[in-house]
Image (cartoon, rainbow, N blue to C red; front, top):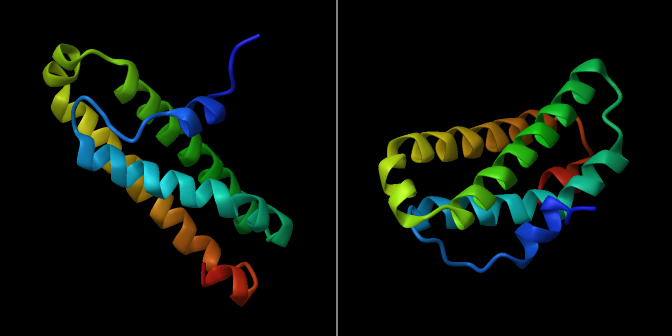
Length: 115
């Protein structure tokens, strides 16, 4: 029985070997989304677009968490060699999370959309 990725992300230190600014920005966004995601689910955006957007948020969240875990556990040398790819993946993960949150804003109550 393995440790849940979310638990590993929550216990992760706020320092990274490489690409620390990108990782910290992504970690802050992931933490924020993880905090509000249950409320978004409870708001039940019932349209098919809403359900697709919820799935996209969930997928983007998992992708971002895996990337953060990868950045935390990889060696400095490997991170330096794969630097451009890691930065690209981080930017894509952040953009996907932000876009999905933007899309869901119109499908949830105003109070929730403002967080």
